[in-house]
Amino acid sequence: MTDPSPVSRPERSRARAARTRRRPVLDVDALVGRALEIIDAEGLDAVSMRRLAADFDTGPATLYSHVAGKDELLGLVLARILDEIQIPDGDDWREVVIGWCHAQRDAFQRHNDAARLCFGRVPNGDALLEGCERVLGAMIGAGVPPQVAAWAIDALTLYVTADVFEGWMMAQQFDDGSGRPLEDLAMEHFRGVHERFRALPPERYPFITTHADAMIEGDGDDRFAFGIETFVAGIACRIPEG
Amino acid sequence: MTDPSPVSRPERSRARAARTRRRPVLDVDALVGRALEIIDAEGLDAVSMRRLAADFDTGPATLYSHVAGKDELLGLVLARILDEIQIPDGDDWREVVIGWCHAQRDAFQRHNDAARLCFGRVPNGDALLEGCERVLGAMIGAGVPPQVAAWAIDALTLYVTADVFEGWMMAQQFDDGSGRPLEDLAMEHFRGVHERFRALPPERYPFITTHADAMIEGDGDDRFAFGIETFVAGIACRIPEG
DNA sequence: GTTCGACGTCGAACACTGTTCGAGAACGGA
DNA sequence: TCCGTTCTCGAACAGTGTTCGACGTCGAAC
Image 1 (cartoon, rainbow over the protein chains, first blue to last red):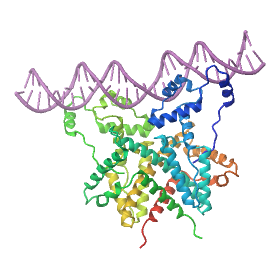
Image 2: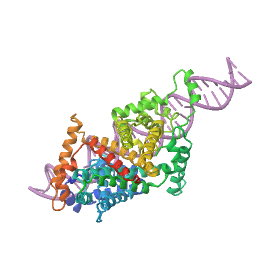
Image 3: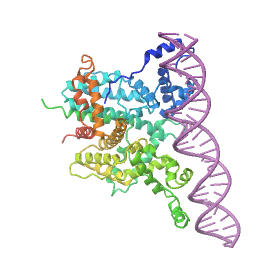
Image 4: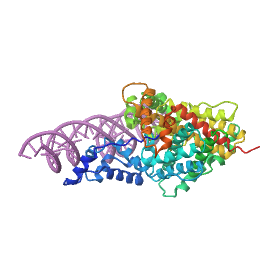
């Protein structure tokens, strides 16, 4: 669900104040930028009002003149990220839809666990609206019923968010502090899962034990692509004949 | 991804100790049960070690003799919830898969935002393993390639988790303290979104403005059912011919 | 009964979190 | 200059998870 509602704020009086003040007024955009840097370096939970204030050589109370609270600040961070999502192109509607999902995933994966910010927020911003319009148009132009297209956007966006967040959280679990590559850690972890699957009683779990290989096969990218493409194939089934 | 690894714990020495102690040893199961009650009443973030300890007339440090930390405790809470998931039945593989997704959603929806606990954790427990086996068998028996079936379980489980968590988070946003029914609050919210969609410049956003109705149509149950059924239709497309 | 080691309890403390309140400074317009 | 608005900021509030070390309880061995 995409909300085009703009964030309104008394910008004029602030801009005028900043021009003449002995020390520049704290800049929300700079705050948001710094918050995003911290997320990129250390993850979402490393962002605290105290830390941000310290980085701007002020106290946490100052921030509350500029944002209603941490939640609002993080909403602005999310808006920043959403603006990074590339508008999909392509001639085939499937290519457009799949491309958009990958673009969303790419944008979020650049920012550790910031995807978590999407939950419970109605995302907004021009880039997202434009992407939404592009994808909606491609589907409807290809004969997908509008209701299907609209709900598909919802479902796909939710899946992308969940995939990125889950991928990040799992990577946190794998980290044993050894500094080894993530891929190695993941393989080790899933090898363990595989062994436990194979060790289950086959008379009770015949399919799991037989197909343990398939259960752990593929990495996060494989699984994401599979999920999106399978869903898109499902959308295609809802295009009426003729 | 399902992990059959059991949680091991020195139960015998503790059971013996509890039988003869002047005051019963703190019981982890009771802790977990109380944590779940708090989640059911007030949501996941209302659970704190201090609050749990107070409820058992002890101090928070006591809890650390029994669990390694809050994270482990919440993992046990999640295992409790997972055990509520009904095993799907039905003759048609689609019915089985869809039924399982609904069973998972039902289980999680009974517990506010506990679905959040799934992120970054490999879920385990007998009920989940049995459900997984049932669904895997139904799909493979119907000709779905094992790799597709395995990855589908992953994707569907992730989608269920995300849907429940998102539904809860959005409900939190709607709550304006008025005590009105959630459905009314949601309708009001989405009416606002609809108005904003309709107010967008039609030359720039022709599809969104034209289909604003479809964009906000349907409630969370409709959208969930749509998402699952569309994905299952996509799985069906991957069954080889003949 | 006594001793000893294991287990459990618990107060105090540490290091942090988001936020509010009220005093005061800075500012700009009249 | 005065006054109202905006911004800053220290102190405080009310929490959070966790650790440390002292001490109590317990059961087995002697």
